[in-house]
Amino acid sequence: MSQLPLLAGATGFEPTPEAAQARLEAVDPAAYARTRNALDGAVTRLSPYLTHGLLDVPQALAAIRTRHHVPVSHKLAFEFGWREFFRHAWRHLGEGVLDDVRPPPWPGRYAQAMPADILEARSGVPAIDHAVRELHATGWLHNHARMWVAAYVVHLRKVHWRAGADWMHAHLLDGDLGANHLSWQWVAATFSAKPYVFDAGNVARYAPREWQCRGTVVDRSYEALDALARGAPDVGPEPLGPRGARPATEPPPVSAEPTADTLAGLRALDEAGWLAQVRAACAAAGETRVRIVHPWSLGEPSEGGPAVRVGLLHAPYHSRFPWSARRWAFVLGAMRRQVAVVHLGDAHRALGALADAGLEPVVRDALVPGLREAIAASARRGAVVEPVPREWDDPDRFCTSFTRFWNTVSR
Ligand SMILES: Cc1cc2nc3c(=O)[nH]c(=O)nc-3n(C[C@H](O)[C@H](O)[C@H](O)COP(=O)(O)OP(=O)(O)OC[C@H]3O[C@@H](n4cnc5c(N)ncnc54)[C@H](O)[C@@H]3O)c2cc1C
Image 1 (cartoon, rainbow, N blue to C red):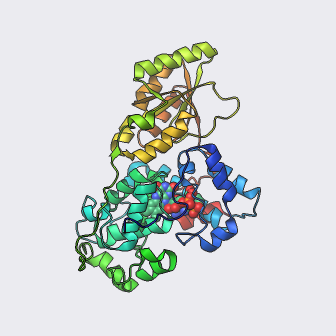
Image 2: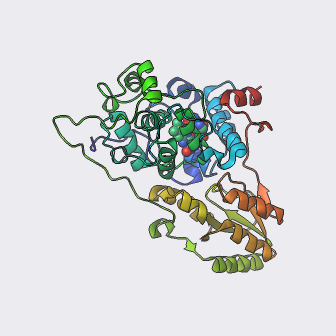
Image 3: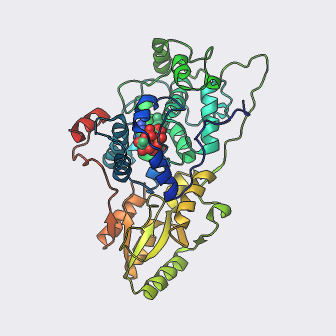
């Protein structure tokens, strides 16, 4: 199984605006609407660029609309709507996205850690093992594969969704706490009305032959799968066949700090060194404004913005939510095009030090634990905070379901 090729198009996420542009130009909305559920369907693969601010939703839709007719009723607009819904929910729930929004459907005690057989892609359920391999090898997974993995982990293996969500978030290039953790909760039925389950027929319809799950635990009726989700303990990995143990693949390591090779070309400075650099650059440019480039604001700088730009990584977030080397490489690759120096430390302190020095940070808002609060605090001391552009106005009242949100914004 380890020799099988990865899905076409899953690799190759260059961290550049040109690559984002090329993906945009390749978008075919008609093919998207027809084929998006299939693993080899014409999905956009824009998500890493959207998560890290190389693109925003209005820019993406405007670019697509220069070539195609995409009314708000189009499936593609609807899916971008999901992204804005999760941001809306995250804004209202804050770190509540990290806990059960409502009680889970199974009264038992879910495991708090991912089982080794799943992490090593040897559960014996081909769709799951292929998806895990794909995620680890590329940092990206098709939406359907994400749903299958989440459903299997939570409902059949009885692992708490949070353990699965943290693991997937660490490896995804587009890992976003709102979209990821609330999608896991949606599958788990702690942010939806019923457990999402899938059967072998669903895999047969949308995935390549090697992913087929006939004869495994998911080869049963939806009623039976729902009953397992609500009533049975961990079903365990598939029994070993006559060929004995399955080959294991090591999950790639994750880390709270970038490795030396992903940092190459950037100077990582402590707070004092970073501040000294910023002061010197501002003095040389005759500026007091300084653009803060963080992992969620990696787009090209706009005309007329501050000439001085520095990188900032909020260390407490990375300690709580470590990333794979692939994710670090993507983020730092894009950051390297904007800045020469970066500080990995506490954003509260770093932004406060800039204000103490009489400087005025210009920073894009980020729905990221700790960084969000640091940016808000710095706004109170005069920083210019740029909101993340939205396609649809954010409703004031919390819409607890996508349907309610979409009915409100797409009217
Ligand atoms: C368990 C699980 C975890 C997920 N984790 C993340 C995550 O960490 N980050 C993330 O951006 N998306 C996440 N998603 C949503 C979705 O799977 C991805 O946005 C999508 O697969 C990205 O591929 P694409 O760019 O080709 O999407 P396309 O289908 O081409 O859609 C275009 C854009 O619309 C948005 N979008 C599409 N579907 C969704 C959706 N269901 N929810 C939110 N936005 C959507 C994305 O920004 C995407 O780039 C998750 C879904 C599940 C089920």
